Length: 314
Image (cartoon, rainbow, N blue to C red):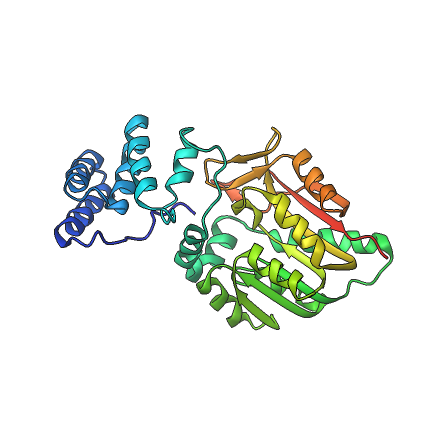
């Protein structure tokens, strides 16, 4: 998902009109003209983060790396919640923190913007199959234990529009979905597959579950951790809400180096060693860790991994 961030007014009607005129020029391919208007606009309204972001994006497209970095830095300085994702753009240009945390504000805006067309974009343009990949992996892991494919309580982390819920509903008595985006939660609610839906960030939701001694027999996270820059804390927290014998399964994008890496798509990828360490340090038993691509980019499968881990039986 690479559309421009939603417009945030400068509070100055003339500056807003200039911004919109520049975007219109850019849409017609006149990037030089658009950049010129935007440069004039931010000179008059130096705190206009949306215009600075657009100027950075255009300069980047023109091959002006230094100019793009300067513009994105101004966005970062004027947008403490990083609504526009300027810190990610700086990281992509190797001009800031290598793997900055995505703010809740940025992630919520991103998915609220896409919710209405999310399913169509994933399944028709990106060949998304995350829930199916997870379901197959969980079935294989459960089959190996000789247990039935049945869970009393399931948690779909970053449930989005509910595609994962549709896949796992037949195997779960009570299914809870949590997502940061209200618009995505609304789409999931319309599918009617969850017993409970919660709008919250993942860490906050799991922390509350720990505090209230809520437990789950299955936790899944399909294509969610690509928006998390540090998996250690969330995996450790999930381990604390899993019942004895509980299963935790997730997908991630991967890369050949170690650790975490921000991809050009502004999604995080993880090395296999990093995942093994995070799962082990959480006290979970790794059942399977296998190559699995859950989506394509420009028609090419994105390298990924599917992991299934469990809490040892008491």
